[in-house]
Length: 208
Ligand code: ADP
Image (cartoon, rainbow, N blue to C red):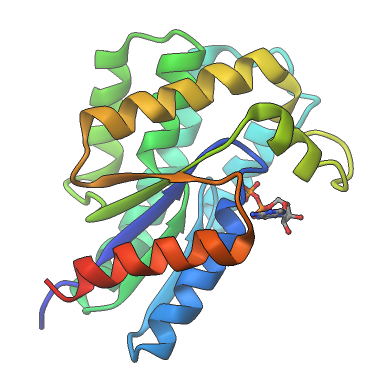
C-alpha cells in the first residue's frame, strides 16, 4: 500500500490553523481519503498529559530546555503511536502543529541553538517528515483579537505580543528556507478565501 500523505498546519496562536486543519480534513475526506486529524502537543494519552505540563500557566518557572524536551517527548509518542502507523497504512494525516513550531518558538523566538533544536526534532520524528506544510501568516495583534473569546491565556500565549511577533517571523523564515514543502498563506483574509487557497494547493500535491 502507498504511504499516506502527511500535512501539517502551523502559525501563531489565533492565526486560524485549527479552523483550516478541520476544513482541510473534511475536504480530503469528501475526496474519498481516510483522514486522521491530530494536534500537537497532544493527540494521544501520554502526549496530552505532557500538553498539560507545557501549557499550564502555573509552570512559569519552566526553563527553555525543559520546554524543548517536553515538546519533543510529546511528539515522539504521537509519531510512534499514531502518525507513523497511520501513514504506513495509507491514511492521510493532518496535524495541527509539528516540528516547525519547535523551530519557530524554541529556536527562533526563545533563542535556543537552532542546530540543537533541529537535532532534537530529528530524534522525535524518527524519519517521519511532513509532505506539505501550511504556515498561516498573520499580524500578532489580529491573532490576539481572534483569541479574545478564549478563557485566559495558556503559558505560551502569556509570553506576550513581541514573543508572538518573533515566532511569526520564525515561521516566515522557515517558509523561505523550505519553499517546496512549506506554503505561506495570508491568514488576514476570510475563512472561505483561505480554505479555497489551501485546498487548491493541497489538491495539486495530491494529484502529483
Ligand atoms: P488557532 O488554531 O490558530 O489558534 P483557530 O482556528 O482556533 O486558531 O481560530 C481562532 C479564532 O478565530 C476562532 O474563534 C476562529 O473561529 C476565528 N477565525 C479563524 N479563522 C478566521 C478568519 N480567517 N477570520 C476571522 N476569524 C477567524
